[in-house]
Picture 1: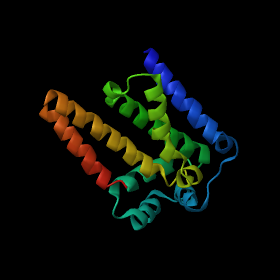
Picture 2: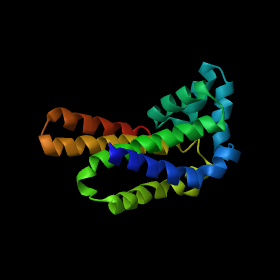
Picture 3: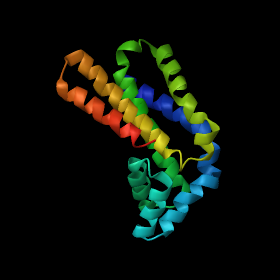
Picture 4: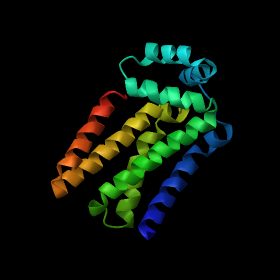
Length: 172
């Protein structure tokens, strides 16, 4: 439990430190306005617009449709982005626990995990980059089940691994 608290605290501190200006002053930019616009459309036109933009990514269509029905606010998408990264991080920490021996390893892993989250695309285009972080969550789950399968040789874990890998291809 103590390790979980340290891991999550470390993650939150680094994330908030980097993203603090965006929490206070962030707003949609270029591509993200698409999400704002589909929020204003009726269901039929929203789905049509999403299909036109993401025809090769049906999971993204569903995901963005659901998100657009909930809110058109930057902070909502920012929070969803945070949750996707946070859950991915926790799944990976749990999966890789045998390899993370001490606090130094934990800190290094946290920094390396968060490094891609600080690319300008993810920082400045929080809304449209959600499917990238959704894919990261799906990949984290696939790794978790693959490692479980290798450890326990349970066919159910192998099936879950394959399902999550399959879903990634239709997300991003």
